Image: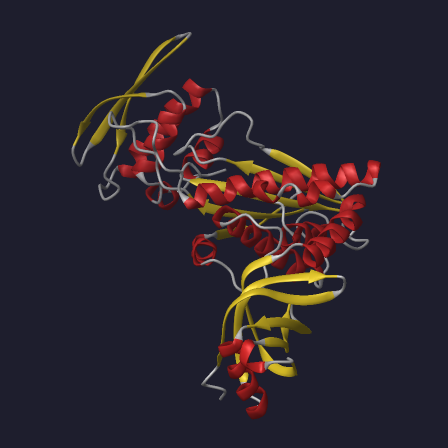
Length: 376
């Protein structure tokens, strides 16, 4: 690959420095606006190089290319691979490679493309929701931290070799300090990608167990590790149909923050596990309660022997994008508001714990019910 001056000028000095530190290079000194000096001892001897740190200088591309050539020799890697790793050093990289008879050399059926990109989004959103607050299911309302994380993600053009979607997640650097060095808080971006790796790994393990033992309990026991109905649905979406036979997920962890040796770097999902993931997602949605659920709908039924002391109402509203009749138990004051809303046909908002028991939807521990004033 021919490396252009424009490509080299776009490489940030901190990316080079981050990658070199991750490979064991020792920083010696810095001349402001000019260069940083590094060294590394290998079996053949010692390498010392001067890294340019001012991209605005005219000879920055030339000097950086000299550094890459030295790194290529010292690390026994091709220059192209060194450059790729340097550019990726401040990102967690997730590569999702789909395989199958309908896919080849970066091409796939037109109708399949949007689905794969949507599944990619759903997969990462599920993982970031779990990083914020592990649950078995996430319904309409998503945590702000998760939606903000999604806004930071970038994708690269699909790579050749079946069909590969590459997602870049920026990771803040881990600064070394002599003050409380072991108390560094893991940033949410890294928590999310770690939860993605953990969630996929545990979901695959649970699906394999379900296929052999017929036991789906593992799905319900792994919410704290990132398994949710949303994640299972997204995974199944990648391998549904005859065009796809498998999904390979590869993780490249940012050199700016280390990960433990046990952290997954490659996972494989076969299409044969899709039915188990689909069934698990369905069961999780049916049986797992959802705390802090906001239900919007209209009061369609009132039931109380003593309205002043409260009663039971049915609110018809959207749950999982379908209209459901949800039973809500209310105290006296809240029940009076429900009566007025029913008489006026007004839209109401209720908040509580959504659950499904014996085929009935209920909003337990309802903390509030209010009329939505603006119905326009």
